[in-house]
Length: 318
Ligand code: AVI
Image 1 (cartoon, rainbow, N blue to C red):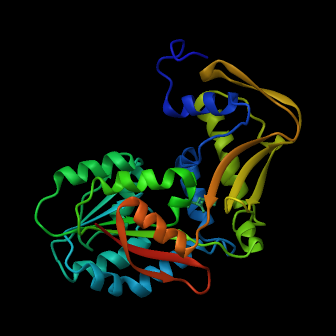
Image 2 (image 1 turned 90 degrees about the vertical axis):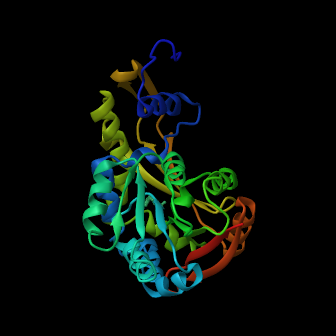
């Protein structure tokens, strides 16, 4: 359908139209996170098979004082995505000891997520959230900066893994363009480990991750007046060894056509066809150092969790 026919499609409707009419059907994982999807993701972080979030938190709890020693006195902590605030608390508590006037600026598109994060971190330091997308939110924070103390930018939870590998250097350069020399970037990234463990992390036996994946179709039904029969799609997880990534797909179990009212389109599916919904790339420490250089940063320190290989890396903007 030409853009001129539907000039005011929401970003979600435009994504569904483009992704489901492509010859290789796909949808962006950023649309997982409506209220139900966000709640399902919080449940994922508690699954015994999904060691990633616990590793991230263990590292931050253990090494927040070391991180503060490297950064020294900081004026602002900005974070891409607000998360639940649980992990961030460790960093803020360590940094506020060096500067009681520390300001925390979480950036998220969801006001509900920001409100929750603000409640969780109340009393730790001054909090002033930014409801915007990551890059625009960071640009706003850069414009509003005052004082000479450096800024620490947090990007935790291996959300970097959900970007296409080829787009990472440009993304990092974009972040760097809003920072000043001497600012810091703390990146949490999941490392390559045994394939069996990685597959289990995205295919838990309780079906929480399956529900998270299928909720994308349920969201299309709810918001775009569609008629997906969720029981005719199955959660599928694959490991791509060449690109070192977990892929999540929705497998169509029977030939069918599904109408989507809001985009006035009917989508045809063959049995066995999939919709590719997410990539979660896994990294090596060497590769993360290369990303630092390509983005205009110098790698300063890294900490790796022993139980669940996951790295917290601290970079300085050059
Ligand atoms: C948010 N992101 C880092 C998660 C991941 O591991 O890629 C999203 C997720 N998808 C399935 N389980 C968790």
